[in-house]
Image (cartoon, rainbow, N blue to C red; front, side, top):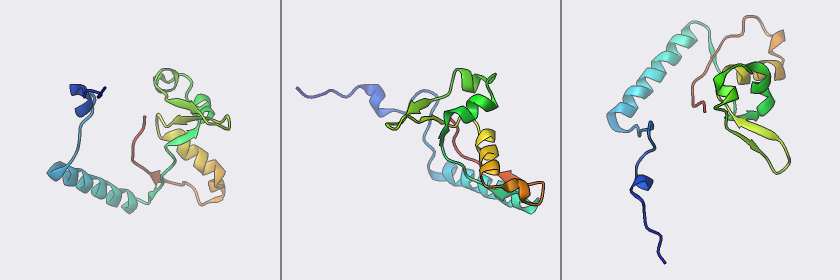
Length: 117
């Protein structure tokens, strides 16, 4: 028996949309200008993983709605508890500590952009 296609299978989910054409290029232009301004003022780019150990956010923001109600978590086959980043700060702080940035000239200034879940 053939599976029938439901009409909602062929549209973006509620609250989501596709970005293409002129709008895509306008957004890229915005990000390029923001990057230019950030670098002018001495900020460096950083990109942290979309998946981090869950306890990074549990320690950092236990009162936050993103952590209490809206965090997407999973357990790997090896038993690691990972979560998709609900915000950016905790991942940047983790990278700062992990890579010994305390010994760098302070302040260490970063900018980043990308999806949070």
